Length: 449
Image 1 (cartoon, rainbow, N blue to C red):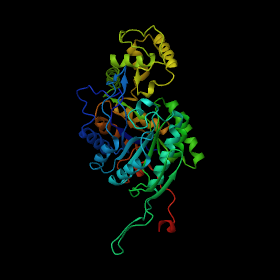
Image 2 (image 1 turned 90 degrees about the vertical axis):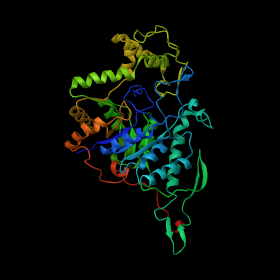
Image 3 (image 1 turned 90 degrees about the horizontal axis):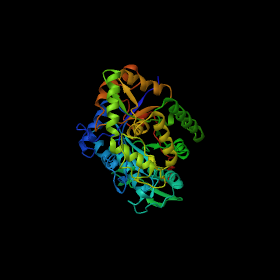
Image 4 (image 1 turned 180 degrees about the vertical axis):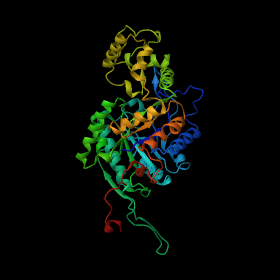
């Protein structure tokens, strides 16, 4: 029976988080992270996930506070969580465009040691000079090169992790030898990196931390098939999800990998109720909180490229033509391409369904993946996974920290169906995901000495 993988993401960054709700807690206070991590571990989840934002978004030249609810540095937070959890995997998003392989590899190896084998790295790239202004190199990297740099970045990190062999720490008091002579030696010469020396951190318990990738493009799918252990996807429509699943799994054979070597885990939201009607009413209320009047106008302005502050969010779309080359919302990947086509599509939907600005934005951006009673939500998740729409889900509550209701009501039903673990059977994240330890080729005895 196919088993479901579950992960938890602290809500933040996007407007899907209702940070203004009185029940929502801080996105910075360590207690919020601890609460959600402990809830996820109580539910026997595979891992806790943190997204990343390297620059506060700006809307019409001002900080865009509608979807900015806290962007702390992930590996620092997860290092704190390593001390208050024992089994839960810890996954951080770390950018491969604005960092250096040595430093990222060292921090991830450290987290893998601190957590005794629970570290994961979501490898992302950055697409714009706007974010790059926060960094020394600015927007130097052409978008076409971001995956070539990311691929070499990851390959270099793997070389650094493999620079320590399993027996390199001798700690031989009698002989007075602590490490083998060749421990940590490395040399890498490539298009983006030319480094050599000694890597400071012995290989972690997992060999290589679990590598996660999020990418819908052709380059992203190929990168995931070659290198990733987990790939996120955006599809909550079952037919589209199955097509993505088949396509990505098909690519694995070209790299000598089996279908089980890469897990497909989309992000998902949920709303529960005692009845279907109650859950539907809650979902509608949550969506309207997520897409308030200001958010609705902001999104339409982002597509139209005009200041539309004079328009009524509950009125029709503006009758003026879009200016898709005028960027009014910076740092938001959703609105960076094909905005003229998006405007035409949005106008067509609004005209056909007689939708106001706010209703349209709810229609095209709002989503609640699983809505219903705990029983119907458990059945829907099982069906999605069993029919190869995914291998599991990263659940994102709309309140911080959230997730208690899911763990208390849905998880027991999944366990009752036999499709989700009753307890952890291993100690590392690779154990939870069913992945073998990953290392490079071991050094020969001559090389080691």
